[in-house]
Image (cartoon, rainbow, N blue to C red; front, side, top):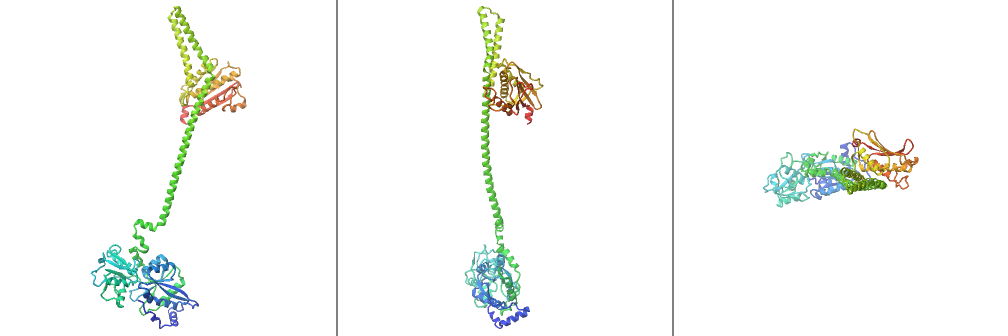
Length: 606
């Protein structure tokens, strides 16, 4: 294409070239340099290494002459090799076809500094196309006829050798990747595709425009052996083409190329005279049409358009998606860990709660046992008095029974006397039975149960039980006459036990003080939200320092006492929401011990 261009430079010596440069730009390009720097120009050798050197050697020679201090050399590559050289930085400039340049611009920052102006092109922007060639006697007439055929091409990324033709085939309704029976890539040089089609080894082949005409002109091919399929009428274009035309080859500076050197090379190329074949360099063309072709073929930077929506999203946003996935994984791990910790903590709390319930039940059972023991202790201390009290009705029953027996033996069967005696026996037996029932009920070991009770009635029962057991003690109990029952939420047995404890302590205190004949007073008071019951004795009282220990376990002033009665009683009252306290009487004789319980309506309000 660009061969024999060195003959154009022979009439000019170095001085002549410098003079031409001075005439064009009115000043010399550079001052002479003492040492030369090698500048490497990578060239796409689509027709082979020898053809590439023949076509492009004039560029290296011209630049070496015009840009002092630099020695320009050509390095030929196939397309994959030139791509690697650009990425590795082993070339400083690249001369390649339009499609390859656009790919390098996108991937490696290549920047075009000039575009070749070919005498065969309509313009630098309309120069390159694809020719789909078939045998001269082939029945194929249109691009649509290629469906189901065997086709040859240079490579998937070959611009004139595949991509341009692929776009035209797609618009004609033939997808080269799916509708052909076989799509075979041969690689460079491009001429072997023409020879394969001529020999019948393929139905069609894709080559760059003007290659067929050059081969015919050079005698490599007969004029009618191979023809261009479905040629497009392009006015003024000297070669047949099966496609529209695209910009010609550029020379591109690479990312690492010094800007000053790129500027020198661009100026030198623009100043270069036409070769004898008519080739020259011009300002960089617009390669937007190449970018549009890539978009329609979905290749290069638009390869993601071939993917499904999901695949495209994964391709474009894989970094963000990976981050989101990592976050989700971390969140899932965190959630599992939190669930595990919550489960473990729940099990621990459940176990602790069960343990607490077990301990509470054990404490309740111990408290019930202590309560029962306390009641038995009270009954034990009152045993002799209870026995004395039972002896009275039993003795009366015996007396009446013996009297009735004597009357019957003497024949004095006076009905009224016998009925009177029987009635007294029934009365005394009921009295004894009542005493036993009260004692049995008090001594029975039952579970504590709070319910609504009449406080005055329960206290009266406890006082009667104590009075029956201690007939010699004087008890003053005058319950108030209320309009309604004094109801509280409590266990009646516990309250009776508390009252019996207080009465027993009061009687013991009076006995130790020698005042057994003095009365024990039980008072009942109604306050705002509570009922208060006070037991006053005339005993020996307590010393001031003893009040602070009165309700402590095992504290007692009795030589034979255990010191548990008041401690248990205080615990029972407080478990019902009440309070218990003690103080000296106003006359400084004896002790007053009281407890208060909340009224039933006040308890429900809480």
